[in-house]
Amino acid sequence: MTALTDAAAAGAPAGELARGPLPATYRAAHLRKSDVGMFGETDDKDVRKSLHVGEVPMPELAPDEVLIAVMAAAINYNTVWSAIFEPLPTFTFLARFGRQGRWAARHDLPYHVLGSDAAGVVVRAGDGVRRWSAGDAVVISPAYIDHEDPAAQDDSMNAAEPLAWGFETNFGALADFAVVKASQLLAKPPHLTWEEAASTTLCAGTAYRMLVSRRGATMKQGDVVLIWGATGGLGGYAVQLVARGGGIPVGVVSSPARAELARKLGCAGVINRAELNGTLADVKGWRRLGEEIRRQVGEDPHIVFEHSGRETFAASVYVARRGGTVVTCGSSTGYQHEYDYPLSQVGEATRAVQQGRHIGKTAVLCLAPREGLGVQDPAARERAGEDRLRLFREA
Ligand SMILES: NC(=O)c1ccc[n+]([C@@H]2O[C@H](COP(=O)([O-])OP(=O)(O)OC[C@H]3O[C@@H](n4cnc5c(N)ncnc54)[C@H](OP(=O)(O)O)[C@@H]3O)[C@@H](O)[C@H]2O)c1
Image 1 (cartoon, rainbow, N blue to C red):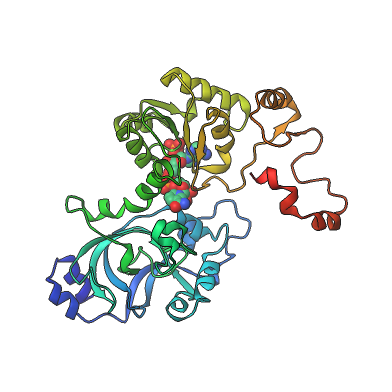
Image 2 (tube, rainbow, N blue to C red):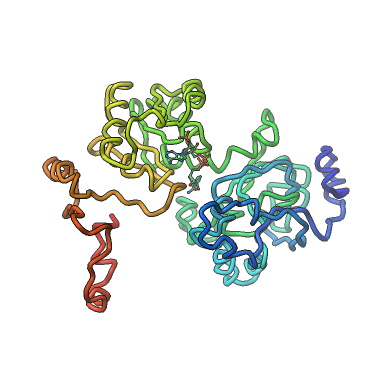
């Protein structure tokens, strides 16, 4: 702790914070570039081995930035991805960002301070900052946007290269200090504790965008919404948004205790996936899931709220009603989504074609053990273009 962090934690007046000298280093949870590759092919990539807590240098502040004394920060799943260096080491993002030069070049370092959700107190503001000053209690949005791009006027997420702070940029939330753009700040709701305020923005904002926004599922009253992980970070907010917005949330969870919590949050239907006979990896499990949704709320989902990815995506596509929407933002269980039919499921595949639920052509794997095998002339394939050949497969 330093005099400045002590003063911020004690609620010292703005003048005292603004005058307090900045420490040369600060305590931060960070990854080391030298650790990339440390896990090799190990199954259990234990993030405690790659996450270090120690001193890092205090960066210089750009004119449009503020320095925050962080009172609390939330852990999001992107910190898990970062700490296992998958799908890409985040040092790749820092290097790419750094190539923009000037202030961006500061971020390309051999260490990465992580974290994308925080609440704290402003202790310094750059010369170009107008709305915020030392002493302000704030929460931080993870959206690191270039507001000079005109596209940001319409939808900041559509601006050129929107970045996730503390994932694709450095100087993130899990530290005693954080460097953020002034445009990331919101006033802290006064009725929340530091840790409550720090836990809201990333997941609630993402769930809102997925469910409600015009770039998402545009949920309306009466919509049945299936929500995976209904008591998790995203799912917990999704349940509340659907229930308060006049929809009918059906939550999927993995234990009786979570089922009870999901009901308390507002779920009209709750499914404990541990009790589904059969696995969600095949059509029997998907059918059971669909039957259970109908039994509990009377109809198929208009919207499926996805984020778990590989292990659930096929089931999501299967249970969504015709014309329904599967909306997603992540893939915790794996980012390669496969939902092919093996020969044993030829009936289902043909039924999908019969009912027009397919696009393009539907194939079944007979003896081929998996997709992607059988290319005899790779050069010819390359000439034809992988992206053109897989146009429908990727859709
Ligand atoms: N693009 C974005 O801006 C953005 C923003 C936020 C999150 N995300 C991504 O969204 C994902 C979820 O984030 P989160 O913060 O909600 O994580 P979380 O708090 O860990 O919640 C995820 C939930 O998923 C459920 N789950 C886990 N494994 C499952 C499986 N095999 N099948 C079905 N459900 C499973 C778990 O609930 P049960 O065990 O009870 O079923 C868990 O509570 C992550 O991949 C994250 O990176 C993306």
